[in-house]
Image (cartoon, rainbow, N blue to C red; front, side, top):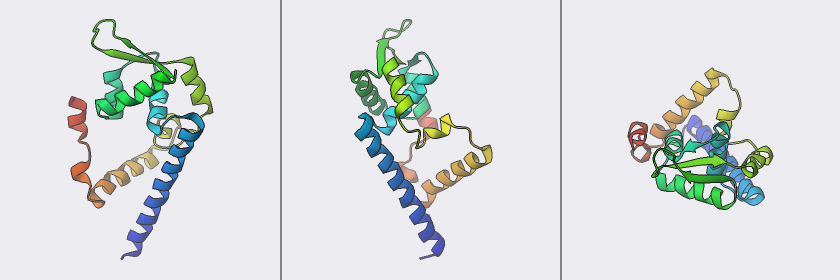
Length: 152
């Protein structure tokens, strides 16, 4: 095996373990998942957001996002109501309890990229490396197609 391949595997495993540990701490200390925390960060940026817009922002299946929103609602971290113009639409808003959770929860993981300023060159490099990883890991056939997801 090439030394570079082994180094890449070690770096990947390190990242994977760090993200797992972060997620475990969020569940243990705050009873939320990394996805739920990401949703709260996005909701904190806007007073209210249509669920469809939130789904497009996160490039996520509606059922997965719906489950995360429902869990946050049950825990009192967000409110969900019907849209004013379109009663079929759902609008989501963060609660004071959700804002308080954001103050306490560690800012780590992919959501940190939106919350902390980073050099554009580093972000471009990360984007290229992660895009390349899909190909190098041979998982492209299972990767979501962003153009398709945006059109759902």
